[in-house]
Image (cartoon, rainbow, N blue to C red; front, side, top):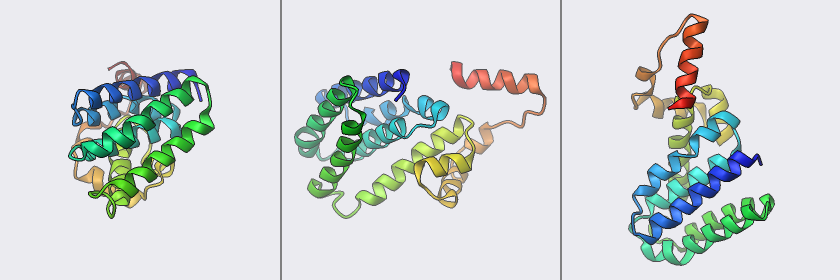
Length: 180
């Protein structure tokens, strides 16, 4: 894992823990978008999985008992694994967290796969919005191109993407993606 990715994921996890402790669970959706920049540049699964996990947790905002007893300790374990540069443990803890949520959550016991799928598609659309091809985004996140196209078609993303034909305009546009 690249150092910048590790740093951004640690920041994401710390902000998420802070939001949970302050009972600002809806803020988690915004926090999960912060790591999308890395995911769009490096196209790495660690950034994407962290964003998807935090977004999924935001969907559980009504189940604070599960968040406090299950999610919070797992997030702290994720931070500890990253600080030790134990990326295998980090990846295992992500899977463990999702499994524990699906087993314990009454709300998501039957719907966790749907929530995860929606979270992945939501994050995929954010990465696509950053200029990564639809095919590459779908492949990286393991979602179908059709689901992603359907979701993007319901958003304003296609309207915001301009047709830029000359090279200097493309360079200016690309710089705006990474500077703002």
